[in-house]
Structure formats: structure tokens, C-alpha cells
Image (cartoon, rainbow, N blue to C red; front, top):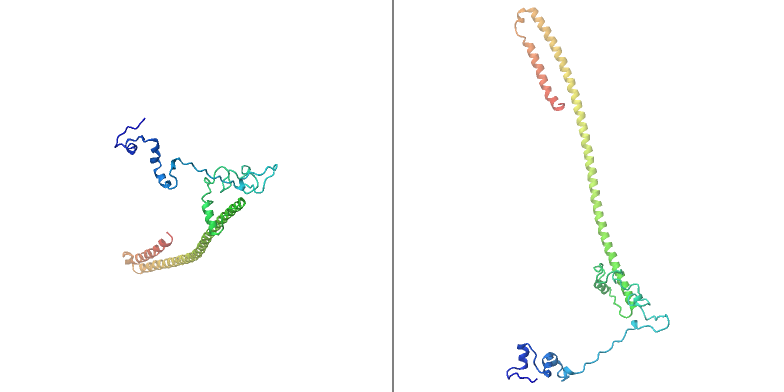
Length: 276
């Protein structure tokens, strides 16, 4: 069918505005490969229709080359790339295990110990120790892997040793503090012992004062009895000599009674202080 669009309706107009590609078949590649064509115009004028170049074939590595058919024998170069031993990878006991913790059931990316056994920390540790990563054979790679594991174990042991040292320092500080507390407690016990001895001395002194007060009270009682007897005799003598004195009040007896009352009042505060 022949194109019947007008003068002002170019193929580019239909592509951008109408949304339908109505350009002739020999002009479609002009717009589809516009950006790529600019790079290859100088090399190939017939760019969309040129023959595609064949890719180069990659040679197999010696480790993956199948061994020669010599019965059940295997070559020494045919080593497992996981462990470095002479067997196939499918027969390797480490096949399917995690390369960090050497346990089956998860991959290296899903290893729970990747925070302590990550490849980044291993490489940084090797760079600090100026150890180059081997790239020649699988056996060297296996040795490098074992060396990385040993370095990680050494770092873990060093960290545990630092933690143990800090714990020992804390225990030593706590022991010193406890020793100071024991010494202070001993000093307080000695002071308490001295206070107990002083209290015992005060108690003995109080007992002696009590006995002395009892003796003084006994002496006062004896003196009071003597005074009563003398007063009684004096009263009888005066009554015999002058009978009119019987009718007068007994002033001397009242005075003696007041003296006895005053003596009891003097002893009462002492009794209240120490015995009640």
C-alpha cells in the first residue's frame, strides 16, 4: 500500500504526535538506533545490518580440567577449590558449608558469626600485617583461609584477655575497698569496747555512791534516834521542874519533825535520779 500522507505530515510527526509508527520499513532503524549510530557512523555505514562479531571462547582453568582416563587415578593438579585436597568438588565434605563458621545449614552471607568473621575484617587484618592474598593455587587459598581464621582467633583471645585484665583490676579495687571497710569496722569495735569499759567504770562508781548514801542515811537515822531520846529526857526533866510547861506547845518536837522531813526531801531527788 502506498503512503498517502500530505506534505506537512512527516514520519517524525507521526512518531512523536500520533503515537503510531507509520514510517517506511527502510527508515525505522534511523530513529531507533539514532544514539548508537552516531558512535559507529565512521566505522560502519551499514550499522543496523552488519554481521555481529562472534564472542571469544574462554579457556578452562587447569583446576577444572577433567582428569585423563587412567582408571580410578586422579591428577595432582585436580584439587578441590574449597579445601585444596585431591578430590572432586561434589565429593568435598566442606561442600555446602558456611565458609565463616564451617557449619552446614546456611550460606556465608547468612552466617550469624559474620559480625566477627567477615571478609572485610579479615582483609583489613591481613593488610595491617602486610600479608598478600594468594591468587595462584587453591592450596595457597586454603592456607590463606586457615591463616585468616587463626588471626581472628588470636584477636578474639586478645580481646578476652583484655576483658579478663579489666575484670581482675575491678576485683582488685573491690578487694581493696573491702579491706578498708574491714579495718574501719575493727576500729569501730575497739572504740565500742572502750566505751563499754568506761560505762562499766561509771556503773561501779554509781554503786559505790549508792552504798555511801545508804551508810549516811543509817548514820542520820541513828543521830535522829539519839536526838529524840535526848529530847524526851529533856522534856521529862523540865516537866518535873516546872509543871506549867505541860500546857505549852512542844516547840522542840515540832522542830525535830521538820528536820526529819527536810532530810527526806534532800534524799528524794537522788533516789528519783538513779533508782526510779
